Image 1 (tube, rainbow, N blue to C red):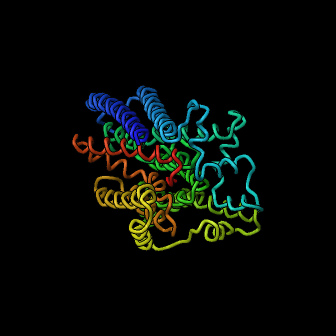
Image 2 (image 1 turned 120 degrees about the vertical axis):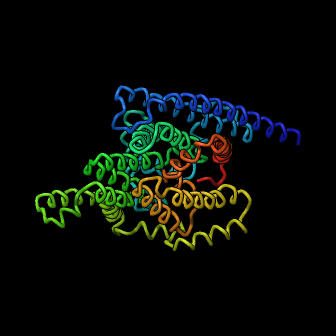
Image 3 (image 1 turned 30 degrees about the vertical axis):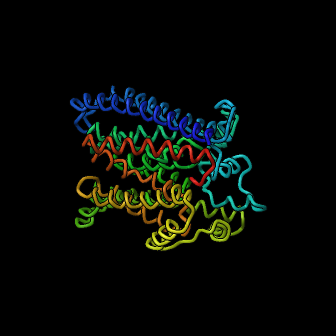
Length: 427
């Protein structure tokens, strides 16, 4: 008993030290951005381009510090609870290769198969394993290739998410949105061999190019997002809304301006690139298995996943919260339920505050995320719904709310990071 007490006390000391460090960084960040707010409160169109390198390296330093702390928390958890006496680099792979991560690494190394247990891996979309395979020839290790891609993707996400938000919001709101992204309770997935970072980066790049009216590049990034995760097809929603808002399509139809209508048709047609990612994935299924919809069969028969109505997921989660084990409640069902409520509240709060295309995308994303009969990763999927970070930044103008959100996020991030490396059901 005394040994167990020492473990828990040691872990508590480590976590409190990390929380204190992050709060000091948060206070420094608030002071910096408060000063810059006086000169950077204008829209992005009038931003001094000379600030771009400073902003980029600021996010780079924030990312490095936050990811190193996450890796350290995970390592300390394995030292305390597993008696790990190896150094952090030696034990790094064993700590972080869990759940879906081995599947992506297997696809990257061996490709898709149509026999044995590996045939079930066709349910995972191809772009992320392909990227791991490509960068393997530089890194010479599949795992570290995946870690590299995820962290670079996260850096791209932070930088372009900031640029996207600066179109509509102040410097403070944009910076705080990034902060809440980096300290989100499940943001450790963004630094591991999972698809979340890559998908989030491609989604943000799609929206950023939509705001700049670069319709083709937006569609191209949307295509890549769809090849990363099925949720990418939902980027058609903000694409169409942004085009209707920014173009003169309705006016051209009324005036029968044929030359401009031809240009409108060409631009809108480029949006077909986004759902074509699903077509390419279906073709991949046919090429590998002979059945273009084999992934749906495997999802149902092997993974136990079918499509259900939105309300059915709530009933399932409620039942699991009542009947399942404590660790499953804490790690899967309660976070999924709470985050669903948070996203719903964020959507309602966002009206007349955030661009309608973002709201519609967030709503469609929520509906799709809650349409699976076995939502084990609902909390991880909802992490990529970027609307919640904007809402957190908006309401955290109040320092008390900022303190509560920051403290809660950091504590939960430490908790779920340790639970993940311990081997519990956080996936």
